[in-house]
Image 1 (cartoon, rainbow, N blue to C red):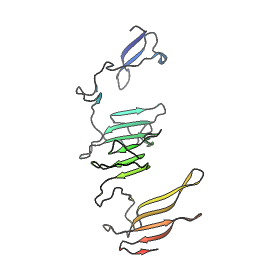
Image 2 (cartoon, rainbow, N blue to C red):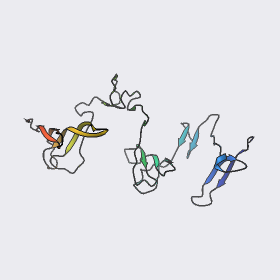
Image 3 (cartoon, one colour):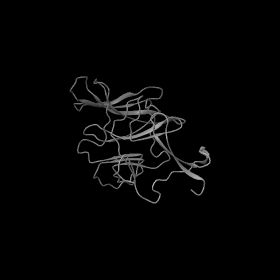
Image 4 (cartoon, rainbow, N blue to C red):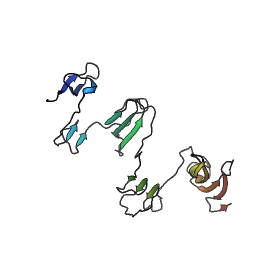
Length: 238
């Protein structure tokens, strides 16, 4: 080294007894004088857990499910802040569903935290490389020209199955189903809903999937009131 910088290599005295690398000023290991560590600064790939690399950085590890709340991370990449919150990225092991996960949480995975995408602005696309909406989801193989500035758009052929499903996960019962609410600001920046539309189950019978469509509006100072219903038999009541 020509500028007092040095690379120190050592071992951790306690568990898990790892080995460390530290670039620093050779006269003082105080963090004030630390320097960056550069891997392959002239080019080349870096592998962790593998000698076969395809990307600039390749990490190979034994896939594992996201740990349950209150346990230890077993992800491929774990990012921890000075506040104790963390971000885990890994690969699933569920047979037939070898996907990946991203999970933001507190320091022991007990409390899930928000995961912010593009917090300073910009669009997010799923199934597309050129999203026109803040969130645009496209079915694979679909070609469209979307020039309108929607907040969200869902594009797919559907074939009778629809592009979006809104469903209720509550225990089987009458009047349970998916609901879409419409509203806006009603005082200052506070939001509320004033119109709902939804599809609900006719009865609580297991295996029965008849349902009705309902529209409600909300008067000032009151709750949602049903204004129209289309029954599973096609009858309309207003």
